[in-house]
Length: 501
Ligand code: MCA
Ligand code: AMP
Image 1 (cartoon, rainbow, N blue to C red):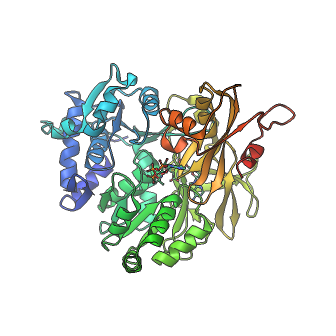
Image 2 (tube, helix red, strand yellow):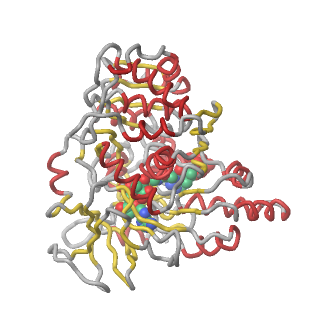
Image 3 (cartoon, rainbow, N blue to C red):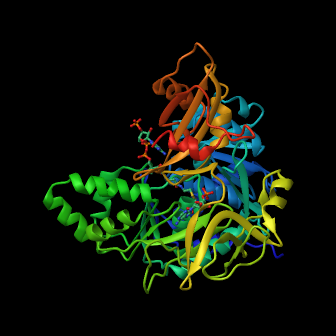
């Protein structure tokens, strides 16, 4: 494959004087981004000519330092491993260790957290402000020329078993994912998007940030979601696009409902100036879709994707968007539904969604068996069930009860159970997701206690918060004498879920 400058970087040169990023640190053009990421690359390279796919984990709030670091890693030939600002040390340790990061870069706000991790012993540590301040690397030619088949990014995502796995995407995968969305959703350099999503998942990283920068558009970033701040920015009237998970729309509706009538009117009027609002990462409840339409005038465009494949299915930008449907395959993506034996099923019959195309990931990092198991004849097996009706796909749910979606995050019930079992009072436990209008599903834990010990929800939450990301912390607890089990002694999750209704 020819070794040349990455297309994302080459394209940025065409937009040099245009605004690229607006964040807490200020407003920056594409030229600023090229220069800053060049400095970061030079600092990471430290006289080498290519990081040669060394993993560089980085922890920074959504903002200028994040983007300059991400691009710097790519330009130096490294693999970007975004860490989550919301994660407790235990989860950060897992990602740094599992990805075998050679370098960890931390925003000053998180430098102390990172320095205190066991996993960084023997790892080169850098601060984003130091990397950004480095003088430009003397000879640009020594910056790595990265071919597209090389690994670009590892994003951690839950599966049905154990701790999160690293999903490896190449530069070519990322380009395919981005180009598919830029084409389908008609991105142009005149677009401006507000980013409110976390930047350790594909929704924020690819659909919002990288699509915007590929198109030469402006990406305005909030370090964290805040309903009133989002409304006041949407009210500014200069944005063209917005993308979020259903929980965020639910929270925006709640904020609108409590605002004074005059503000409601001005917010709604400003919304109407956006050209497109998108929902995804979890099922969009019909009620949220309807309320949002009344408030904003927008019929949310619902789409379906996954960390391993980017986006696969989407309702149209032009034409009818069907409530409850995730539409048709995006450009360059092939989708089929199969039965349990792997036979392709026709319209009207439920089957598992399988996906093929240039956007599909390369591998689970250092897990060849899991990678092999994830494919059938070259098709990626999503674990999502769907049916094709009137030419469009409707999702029916996950094939595993142990995968929970809460606030748009994919969560493994088994991972939480493993952690809860290490709590002294817990003899056995079962974690389930229970339907919730705000969060999609709420994490609920049923526990058999070691007698005569006792346990309250508050105690369990305080303990779990130290070990699990906030969205994995149980929100309800039932202490039971015996968990419901079938004749084989296996815990029956539907009956566990019934304990919380
Ligand atoms: C937080 N809280 C919760 C949950 N999370 N309660 C129940 N269930 C949860 N899942 C509680 C906190 O403990 C706290 O309670 C209160 O809510 C506020 O917490 P905070 O962390 O401030 O929440 P937030 O900032 O309002 O977060 C909500 C959020 C966030 C903005 C919706 O969850 C989010 O950014 N979700 C997006 C995830 C995402 O990007 N997913 C994409 C992955 P208290 O106040 O009592 O302490 S999927 C993907 O990438 C694929 C490819 C795809 O298809 O998109
Ligand atoms: P993740 O592994 O975090 O990338 O989450 C991907 C999963 O989110 C998919 O496998 C689906 O289960 C779910 N998902 C994404 N978009 C939608 C949607 N529009 N409706 C329902 N579920 C969705």
